[in-house]
Length: 364
Image 1 (tube, rainbow, N blue to C red):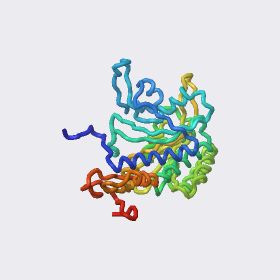
Image 2: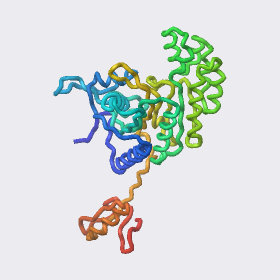
Image 3: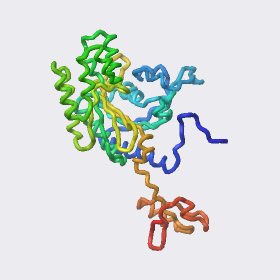
């Protein structure tokens, strides 16, 4: 028995697993204080149902198998947001809007990328369903930042994008040319964009620190087609001023294919790549109606792997024979106690940081 796991899967051992639980507790605790109530969807559901809610072909990255009970194809979720949308549209369809939901759980992907080889990950976040207004977006971004701060994450940065920018500004282009323009803008291919129409080149050049980038975008927007979006974006940025470094990349669409007017990526100092993502989108109802929503998802693994979430191992060794009521009193004070089960047990063997002495706990 080698303990070998499939590629892209991993065990999380102590104290890292405790840190993971602490991260989720802190994030969901902040969300709860803002009125976000937790839901817990199942790990797998009918593949066709999940596919109808995983936009942009996301079901292609879902692990599928035949259920021996129903004989129907099931899919293990590659993303939790779609399931939260299903709950909001069906079992909570009667709930007054907006409905605020939070979640945490495992997701599994069929394949991994070279940059991120993990196939099994922890995802947690919040969704505000029924609104995609500026006020709703401000709340969601604030919750994300406060939740990360509560989890001990520092050096937070938010990179905003406008996923439907090309569709809004280039509505006069035929569908094929518009799709090609989107691809060229996604790739930051200045030559390819110029070959379609040089008027769109300034969109690539507008990216950068938020204040300068939004000024450049306003200068480009001669017809005021983006005025309401840019005004809303400026309000969101002003609401979190000083809490995070802000940038704007107006043409970024990687991972934002199903977002509507707003998208944002979350980064943190000391972590390579994104630690979260969010924005506005729609959820589908059974009658074909689409309902607006805004939310964010955090990726626990890069945060934990970078050691940003508090995971202090503070264990108090109780020598053999310590009265049970003494241990209970210490636990009530917040200590993690590890009792010696034999006379020759030691604090070092039990990975303790403190030991109970005659005058109380002392550090080793």
